[in-house]
Length: 318
Image 1 (cartoon, rainbow, N blue to C red):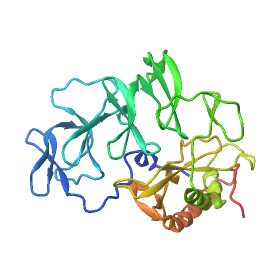
Image 2: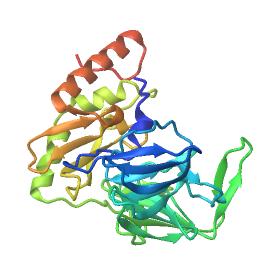
Image 3: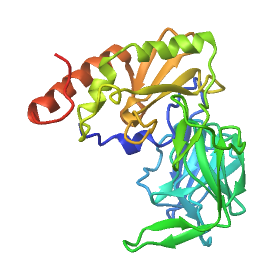
Image 4: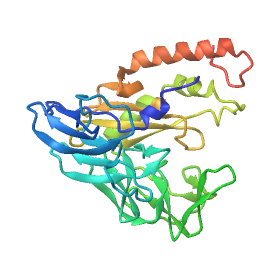
């Protein structure tokens, strides 16, 4: 199934806090953008040249204020894009430049840049990993790769790649992790194996069991997979990548394919209420959908895709 909404799901997600002050973007006469509150008090002065489509008076969503551009007259900085402020107008950080815009949120965090170094912040703008390395990848299955002394270099197709430097692997705490012997529970990164990175209490294990016991979910995903998979391969992994915190009273569950990769699985992002009783899927523009409704809809879409492509290698169970 083609999913046109995947990129949108990678952007800052799940803005659920209640009773937030109403804030609105406004444009000055020279088309610079700032933010005011409902009473017209300026929270962030109009000083940004914005590259995304933004209406005058558009509401600020989420826990932070994001300006998709740079300040007037400012020299562009390497690897930086945009500005993020808290809702009181205090500057927080500059996101890492990725895919012609600000870095997306993966596993509850996104990259930011300070003094040329890359680190990670959460949805509230709190620094999770200090910016200490020249480059850091996005999180996948609890790990990132990083390098020092490396730099960008154009490839033959005019894209850029990181070359040179000394490389390593970090966990969510920013700790450098060493490879271990391969086992059924390790994670492979760049041809080497690393320890299983997640730990759960009994309540969290029960939350994950809800998804693990639902055998139709892997079939829904792999019906659109181009290569024939064995029954052992045709499985998904579910992990809690974000826990309840200020402005976010949910567990966020990420879905990974049989290689423990999250690529292409952002339409299978779920949230569970703090008490563990309410399960929802998160889709287009952060829309929350009751799990049962999402499951019925996804099954119908998979059945339709299978009917339109009868030669697909991985079919739904009858």
